[in-house]
Length: 393
Image (cartoon, rainbow, N blue to C red; front, side):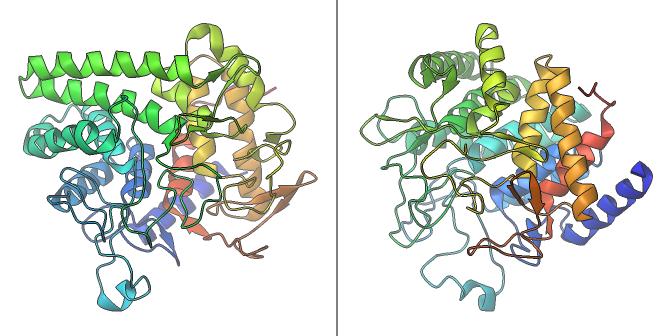
């Protein structure tokens, strides 16, 4: 594979998705607009490539930050949007939503995380001071609106009956995850730990030492609760979610693979978690699946129930690299590059059946259609290529 040619092609994809304001639209041809989660994750991935993307994304999202409580749009004070559609014709495609639409449980958390990552990477404290009121409001949202029952976890339950039923990254209008709301997804709790820490760092930039200390204490309490309640010792892995009756959804899924990057997995659990991710029911030659083949509701073509997502594997790769699992990180990196080479591109997601790669952007299956260009897939590869080559097996 010619790495320079690949970088040039990825750069063209970034330029195609870049809005005049500087943020990355989520995808093309679908989702060619501002998203909270997608635009923030792709901004995080491209910090080394072009940190201006992150700055533009944070400023744009801050300008649309929630200021009222409104059920139709699911807006709440301090909340960061899920999706905005700027033209009336596009808005009519979802007539039951209000725009901007705020049905995302993790956009607000990622807003704080990416702001801190931007400041750490660039040393630019101007954004941290310019947007301090937005960061303060986002952190307040976590306490006031994000924690629905006061147990410390960040949960979601849609306010608009026509809105998204599931509001984490495996979102959807129906209950495809089979979890009764309010839902506390495992990776969202990890993001929340990191968001508390990020807010603490941003508070220190703004000479708010007491707020920083309080936020760090919140992070510690939440990390302890996450490890106490979500860990399944019999399988050496974390549960997918906690439902509205505080029951664990014990399905084996990729979501806990986001936790190592956040820094919440104890050292004595890391080897168990990594081993479970690389078992045959999760690992493929093209990356780790969203949902294990051993689960009764596995679907190789299911949007979130068995396909492989490059951005999901980026979280896994980054976490493995950060925690010293270089060999396993190399396997994930090689798998994504293998998929790119065989598909001649990196779509939103793809399927793997009997170790055979299926391009769902060219050949939709069972209603699952992938975008051929997706910001957080492109950003994942850009970030991987900027790394020194990890050792492969």
